[in-house]
Length: 255
Length: 360
Image 1: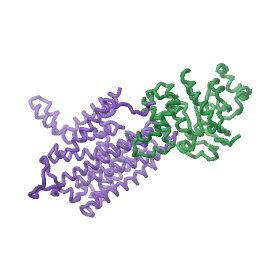
Image 2: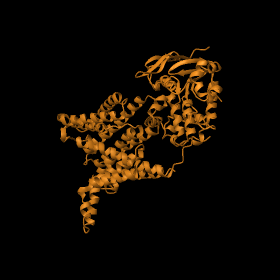
Image 3: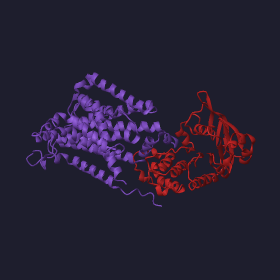
Image 4: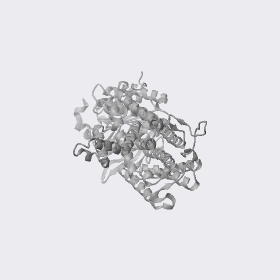
């Protein structure tokens, strides 16, 4: 197996007396798509927040390719190749779809520091932004503001932003939440495509079992902030402890 | 694929740009169009305030930073030039050095305020700028040996701008008149103001159209996500705060040269800060064109509303009550009413609302 690209060591966060995530140590490898499952309140999003930098951990470390990210701001982690899409749509509402994507493209180029050359001269940036527009099938709404999009398209834009960052680590937090059935496959195809690139690491929080089955190379299970299972999808799904804490309560979703 | 093509300019955009073009033309030819001292004074003030308001809009409208220290930076520039002109005598040296000194002080102070407090919540930042501006205002009136205190400083400016300077002479050696306008130092001074402000405004237009401009809007729209996709929000905010401070400072220096006088009332008072805020709101936040419209309307109102009301009061003298209501002394009352009506009917400012309304 190749070197792990992302490592969390004893990652812990406490809110007052409540331990939301407790000593989660895990390694993630390039070319591997790991699905993180667990009941609501298990700490999945909080775990994500500590990896992408929105929350500082109380204890433990986050390493990417051996570099300690623990004390870095989210912007620095993004520049180190950790990209994140959010569960709740988190866009730039009054900017157009194209501008939203271009912002993510230009962030890695450092072009955002240019304060004198008109945007339209950066044809290469725009061309790259357009590639992601096409990939997410948003080209028809390119000049609409993000706020004016229907929910499904906003979710796609959320994914487009992450793809446009061109990270090494892709973190998806329920990318198809609230999406209609005809939109969801678009997003899942995109994730499957990223998975084919063996240099990329994908972390995916997902509830829908059909999605999990279709995409997962590996499943980890969080319960009450603790990592209770980690391994091959079939193995994990059939293990007793997982059935008890998670699937037992949601048997109907296994259809 | 043809998404690179920007939208066709909509009607609202065109209306706003046409208004701005008319204002720009009026300012360009102001000394020829309105041949009295007061009108040229008004035109110069409009030029200065366009830059001041546009640079403030870069903060409040584009980036979402609320600062009450914009006049402080304006004052740094004005006092820099004023003090040096007073100490060194008239000449271009003190003007250039004073401008540079003003800009340097502005950048240092803006960086300090920015790094120390742009991490905190917007309301605390606003309070800190308010405190800094108050301190500077008090300092300016206390250090009277240096700043002239409440009385301010009167000084002479470079010879080129003296009214007696002849830019062009006719055969008799008298100052040449073109279209009735004397080609003298006063004219040179006006075009000095106009050109500097024009260049500064063009610069600001470039800034908002650049990739940085989009990042600033992104920070206004969703600070957390801007940070999340890789932008160091604090660094960007601090940079734009310094940039706006620099613009305000240069505008202050130019105004000091134009007025030949600098005091708390012309360069530092909170009354100017409130004027700037009103102009931004009237014109429309987040659009540079709004700054031009807002500054023009407000300055015109400040100078001419009283005159207009005197005429109206005169004209209605036969009717009871009305002449009293329209008495020139009540101009602030009417200005207030006009302002409330503008905000009510143009919630996004004149430019903002017109652009939005016609875009569908």
